[in-house]
Length: 375
Length: 233
Image (cartoon, rainbow over all chains, first blue to last red; front, top):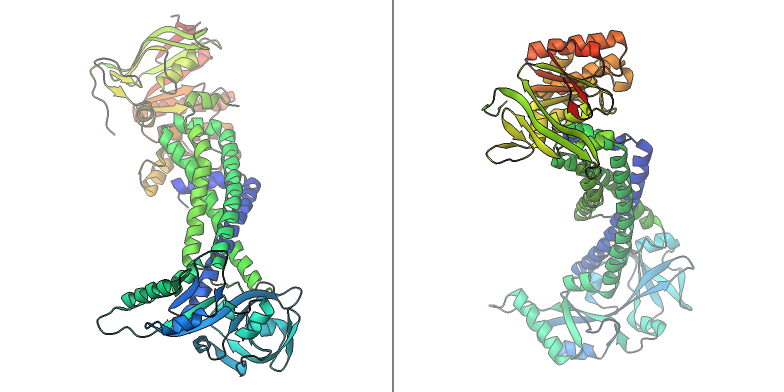
């Protein structure tokens, strides 16, 4: 194979195999954490969006405040009078333990809500309002080994499984859905709901869908002070759970990336120190400071990129493992957006270049004759 | 390869060159003036600490003088002076000067063929051209059977021949050799000197060699001796 500038950089990196391999492990862990955590939080957001889109939800009505997430159910009567709204479905969402190991999302719906349109009942039937009945997502039913007719204990109450369903959203495929009144009793939320999901009427002639939706949002906020109507896409991206997931993912990833960057900086600094005389030779052969700088930066970037590829594989594997664990299967999707993969690689190369910049600069500043004298 | 225009008959010239270390407390060169014409073979001799290697480093653009000037074809090297055009040190080393070291300084991760290509890496030259040029030089120096060997697999004499090929790969006008036979036995020393003489004749390269061996210096066209940072003959 013919020698190239990039090949030369890679040979330098690979010369100390053990040290390079250990550095790659460090970077791989950092990028793996980024890919797994950020990938998880994004697939979590995507699952929310899928849930809204498959049900045909146009708007969600929620509290304006972040911490107080409950809405009076009586608001449903006000929403029903708003001319743009076709249907307002109250819903509750909560996380509950179904076994000591397994926590799952639990939804409270009305038995006649339009949100059933997204579900495919595989076995049994829908639940009935006011009855201690639940339907299970097929993923959860498989994990719990439950079938129609079995019972399930939730927060001290015993519920009969009356149906098993399939949903395109991972948030529902691993969830339990029960009558909203039973859910209110179970959660101590009498008269309260988490949100209302709205379907709008078709816009009249001459009014665009966006204008129609905006009119609906404005009317909701005028008629129900303290509440706001948000488009489904925005709700998917900005609800409290997704926001917290994003924040936790980025925070943890950044710490892991910082540790990886320090590993690269250390490796490149050691490499420059050990190769001081060689840098002197390169300078004596006419290599400019810039060419030396570029070589060392390329070595750092190569370390970052190789670690990034290892990290992508690690992150992908971590997501697949999480998706098979009963404790996390209901909220983890294995789908890894291509943007996250590219971002991971770009970030790895950038971390490499940034971490290598100081040792590279120092290496490039060496005078040829001083470098040649180095022992 | 472009060359600077020549207002002076000397290819390489130093004028009142001084080099101090440790804030001026150590004077390695104390005002050396010297002229080398194209095609010349100059030997510089002297005891350890006489300043011969320092002079060679300044002639090769590896270091900068504390005072005085290094001129290549009449142009100042690495130092702009009134009325002269300055040649950048990197450009000078890359285009006009080739270096041969006593300790060879080959890169251990590259084989012979690759080591010779190193000066051309990153210059925009085509990979195939680089390899052909390196191969031709190694064949010329009798290493056609050692192209893929790494430095640790080569004898000392072979390593120095690879280093000579590397110094020649950018077709320099002046070749600067710092004790090129210092790490070789007598047989290999004689061979390397013969090769350098052939290279000088075949390529028309000017050769400046530092040596402590008067016998080797005697093979040069010209010989200057140094003592205490000054030329003494």
